[in-house]
Amino acid sequence: DSHKASPLVPNGYVVFKQDNWAAFGALNILCGGGSLAYANGLPAVNEPIRLAATMGAYGDLSDEIVDSTGLAALGTSKLMGAINVEMMSMGIAPSVGGSYRINDMVSASVGARYIHMTKRSTATFVRGGANGIDVKLLDAEYTANGYAGILGADIKPLEKLNVGVTFETPTKLEYEIDIKKDRSDGDVVSKMGGNPDGGKFRYDLPAKLNLGAEYNVTDNFKVMTSFIYYFSKWMKMEAVDSEGNRINLDEKTHAYEIGAGYEWKFMQNVAWTGGVVWDYINQPEEQTGDKLYKNECINIGTGFSIYPNDKTKFTIGFMRNIYPDLKKKDAETALLTQEYDATYHKESWVVAVGMQYNFM
Image 1: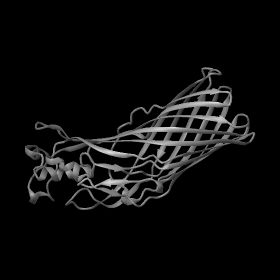
Image 2 (image 1 turned 45 degrees about the horizontal axis):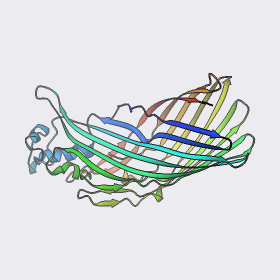
Image 3 (image 1 turned 90 degrees about the vertical axis):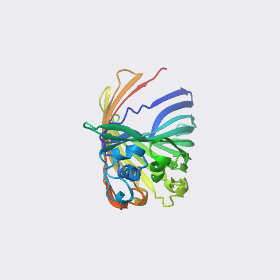
């Protein structure tokens, strides 16, 4: 159970326009950009630590972690404290590109994006009281770099209708595992969790087709709709076993997003926006676990745009993410342990602020 607020997720954009062409750049935080903290740990982390301590893999520290050690206690030993697990994921993605207005109806664009992905997880054993202890047992980092191309077009078939389409190529991401700390002998906990030091695995970002349309009902009111399709079957996904061997995750499914919204300029310098998006992830159950679970999601958002002058625009938005529970039956925590059923529940609120300024 995690209640940790994610850090600020800044994004920045710049555009230079001259006659019929424009150059643009952006710096985005992709793929989550958030963190989680579990005060009581996760089964996929707690069980390998319990097993390792029971077998004495932490040396004298083992007796501080579990109430009994030895082969006979593998199924009965208990943790004598809590394991705090913290997880972070962030993708820093700068991009550049250009666009050209072919005629009054059609514009085209091309761009390129680089992404540096970082995932990190730590596990700390904590016990209060007179015999209190606070010791970090595990610190693992996963990093990958990738590139993608982006093609786009903007079409204005009617005076009041605008249609946009972009296609993003797949992004190859090969993660390398760096075990910065594992207090267990021979890094046995990392290996049991499928994270051997120096191991590599692919987990790409899929190609993506984005479609959007905007229609001006009146001069002060317009409606929008969007559709995103993820070509998940084109991407490569792998896991790693305890020996560092790659395991190909063959089953891949389609995923998409559908959204609708509006903008109402109810005052001369203020507009009210709102919308809803359904995010259909469709993650296979066998690929769901404590370290990777992607619930379907309904995003409901609203906000305001304020125009104090012709050059400046301020925005503020609020979003509520509603995630239906994701369930997995017969999950496994580690070697020699029993299976269990798991339910993954999420809920979140998001606040966003922005500013746009025209220098010319």
